[in-house]
Structures are given as structure tokens and as C-alpha cells.
Length: 456
Ligand code: NAD
Image 1 (cartoon, helix red, strand yellow):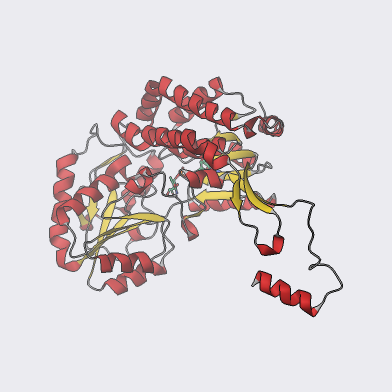
Image 2 (image 1 turned 120 degrees about the vertical axis):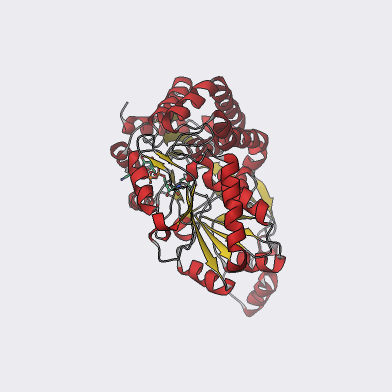
């Protein structure tokens, strides 16, 4: 079916008001969960074929997050969809004021490839919970996962309500030219710009979940062993192909050597650090990205790893040391298993350096001193982050997830996702039995004095 026709059908279905019924929405969310459960083996197989992701990692970083979000929406959608009373103030006496959450209409979700299921399905679920219709356009790069999502959803839902349109640049370009009521995009900054510009032509509201270089501070008083353990897990999960992965380390010079050693020990504990694929470690998505990443490895600065196998698209967990802000690897988001380590002697100077760069999607702070932690939290602007942890903030649906500045606009997860796909319609509701003369002419000094008293 033509994209334009799907859109028209979704507009008609939305206008039938079916999706405004909260029970209908909850039933659909339950159905999404049931069909994902039924087809789990297909989902596991497809992602393994695309980039060697194990069942364990797929469950932890994709399916568990999706189920967690669906459960939260099933539980809260009724409450979140209710109108909320607010006070009217004396000036509007007698009246009621309330806010009605309403769905936006027909929504488009464009996904990125690195977590192909959750990056498409969590925004889609949020949109369905808010009462919209949804078209998902998954990334075309992992073609098996795109195909399996299209099959599971298109076989089980009518396209006038919820469907997947597969494709690459051509199809996405056609989609973003349509008059959607909302576009939710996850991906890179340059493509985010294209989507934003296309949406602006029709004044379509957008949420942009973009990327950036997420700094990770390791201060002198940290628990070195635990810090290394948590960072190594977060960085090399998905072979570093995670938008919120620690992109680079800023470590206090006084603990640099011992911290590097701790990183090395952790890598050796968990990863088969050879020119080979191990079951717990992913391939790079395609040769383009493999070649891009290979060029970032300065052989003279490799402290751990640096093993490459182009045929298998394998890059072993790699630590680079003696890095400065001027190195090539510090120019753009790495998005792969390469971790540059920069040491510093003056925290204020390094904060200044970070502030000179674009606002990151995430920031991680490893330290014990609350004073230093709070200083970093206060001085740096970033989307979201964690203290003495990395990545796990995503697993709490009570924490809105999104970027700031070039790392994105808008947020989702839990209630934030519901809000992102809702309009809050404000209503002042008055009876007929009383009308004050205050606002009507003839205007008098006495009336303005009373108005001032009421308002101020
Ligand atoms: P991408 O920008 O290349 O692609 C994202 C989507 O845009 C895909 O669906 C793709 O088909 C589509 N697209 C590609 N070129 C297009 C064009 N010219 N016109 C219209 N649409 C086009 O991103 P990616 O490579 O899939 O993902 C990697 C990037 O995404 C990284 O920068 C990463 O940080 C970011 N990311 C952000 C988040 C987040 O939640 N903030 C999550 C994952 C990835």
C-alpha cells in the first residue's frame, strides 16, 4: 500500500474516536506484549543474524525494557488519561479549571539500528498508550530485525491503526514529507536535522533522540575496582554501539595508572580479547562502521585490545591512553568499542573543556565526594546520566530519557513518553448563575483596584 494511503486510513481511524477509549488502548498494549512473547524466538534469531547479539543481551537491553514499559503503561494509562483539576483563582469565580490529556493523532516513529527493537517499540507503545495511531519506520541496516518487526506487527494489527513501513532513505524521505501529527526520531545529528527541517514545513512537533560524546568522570576518591567494572560493562555492551555509552574517560592523573590497570583486568575477565568472536560480544553493524572505527585506533596509543577482523566485523574491546582533546578519536561520537582515556590534574579546567563542546546525551560521574559530584551535576548540562553507574538510568521508566542541545529535544520513557505523545487541553468551565461586573465597561478606578487585589 502507498504511504499516503496508510496515512489517510490512519487519519480516518483516528477520527472515528476508537483510540480515545482507554480500555481499547490497554487491550492493544496487552496484545503487543502477547505477540512479542509469542514471537520471542524469532526476535532473538533475527538480531543474532544481524549482529551476533546473544539472547541474554537481547533480553536485558531490548525485550525486558519493552516489557517494563508496556507493563507500566497498562498500569498507568487510565490514571494518566484522566482530566486533572486545577484551581481557577478568585478572578474566575465561580468556575472549574481542568486539563484534558488528548492524543495528537497520527504519529511516525523512526528508529535507529543499534537497539532496533526497543528504539522503535518503546516510542510506539508510548504513542499507542496516549491514544494515537502509529507508523514505525525501523532502521534498514539490521534488515532481519526490521523484517521480523514488520511481520509480527503487520500480521497482527490493521494498518489503519499500527503498522511498520520498512525502508531506507527513499521511504523515510517520503514519510517525513507527510502531514503527521507528531514525528519521533532516534538517530544521528545530521539526519535529525533533515527530519526537523522536513517537519518544520508542516509545523509538525518532533522529538529528536540524538547522540553525542558522553563524558565519564573518574575522580581520585572513587572505588577504582568497581568503577572499572561498571564502565567496562557499559562501554562494551553492544560492542560500544550505544548512544549513551561512556564515550571517553576523564580520570584524575593521580589514579590514572591504577585505573587503567583495573580496566584491563575487567576486560580480560569478561571478554575473549582475541581476533575472534565471543558469544558475549557483538559484531560491528556493517563494514562502513568497521572501517570508520578502525581509523580511530591510533596504534601508538593502544593500551588494551586493538584487534581487528574485517571479515567478521570484529573489533576487540580497546582502551586508548595518553589521549588529548585534540586527538581524532575525540572529534565525533565513537559509537564502537574504543574507549579513550584522558587524564587531568585540574577539575575546573576539564569541566571548561567539556563545556566548550556540544551538550552530551549522557554524563557519568564516579566519585565518593558529594561536593565534587554536586559540582559536576550543577555545572554541566547533559541529557541524563548516573552517579557511580553508567547506562542503568535507562532501566528506570520513572526517569525521563532524552537529550539537550545537540543531543536531542524532548524525552520519553514512562510518563514522559505519554506526555510526549499527548496534548494537554486546558479548559475553564463556568456556570451561568453569576457574572461579576468587574471586567466590563465602564472601567472605573474602583474596579481596577479590586482586580489588582484579586489578581496580585
Ligand atoms: P541514522 O541517523 O543514520 O538513521 C536513523 C534513521 O534515519 C534510520 O531509520 C534511517 O533509515 C533514517 N535515515 C537515514 N538517512 C536518512 C535520510 N537521508 N533522510 C531521512 N531518513 C534517513 O542513525 P543510526 O546510524 O541508525 O544510529 C546511530 C545514531 O543514533 C548515533 O548518533 C546514536 O548516538 C544515535 N542514537 C541515539 C539514541 C537516543 O536515544 N538518543 C539511541 C540510539 C542511537
